[in-house]
Image (cartoon, rainbow, N blue to C red; front, side, top):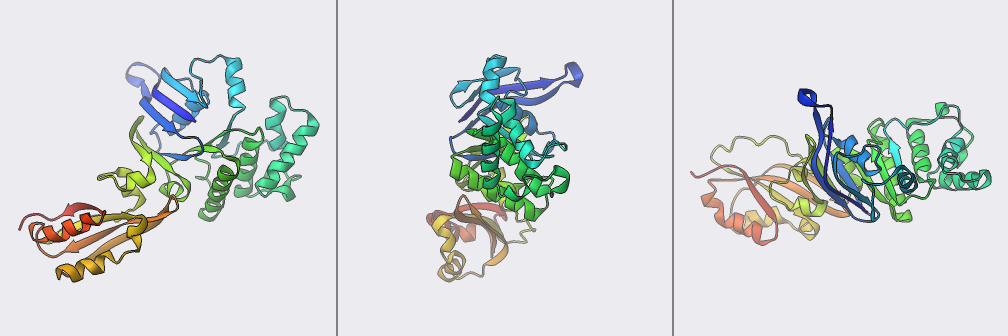
Length: 331
């Protein structure tokens, strides 16, 4: 659905130049929910705005639904943008229009007649659970309701792609969960591809199939979450399962075990202790449901040096677990 190839974008020039995007390549499959994670200033907003060409890249190719947009003229872009919906952090609703009127606006812009506009807007408000608020004005809505209006407006033109620019960062945790559940539901029901940018790993855990980490305008890593979980040294996997600082080994071996799927249900630690006759200390654990599968990371302390625990470590790896040494060494 989305292919970004070697995208660069610089603002300013000389010593004041800001390289917002630096040789970024990204692929989002049809029907995926793909998250781009990064801190403020990483280039996330610039990246998402290149997808619908609100920001034209300095170089590189942008292809959406098989259409190359980076070289397209304004008429082609207007037509292409009708297939791309976008929701924003601050809702961007018109205070002078009702909820129904705000949703109709998206159709009015593309020339849909009044009768069809009202019918489609009513249909999509029902989908997002706001039929009872159709006559209300934005000032009468909660933050979550405003964002639902924003989502309805983005969906009014029946897009194939939905872009989300920090759409939940201004909402409280409970409202965020309800909005994410709505996005996941409409993605499934409408066959919609979703590209969202966020600085919140909880958003990625909740609904994303794949993710990319963006730092200083560059993609550090990307891939399906289930694949990243099993990748040694993955920064995204560490952020998905935070275990805090590693304590001093004090002559012991400290390891992180990452598990997913069927391995999540096995008594791995109890078996390890019984089989090898060692006292295993659990230093931390984080378990989540990722892409419909239970996955997590556990930090263990094994008595003695790494050499003394070779058999135990090999036993864990033979079970298909990702085992990483995070503390300890030769005695």
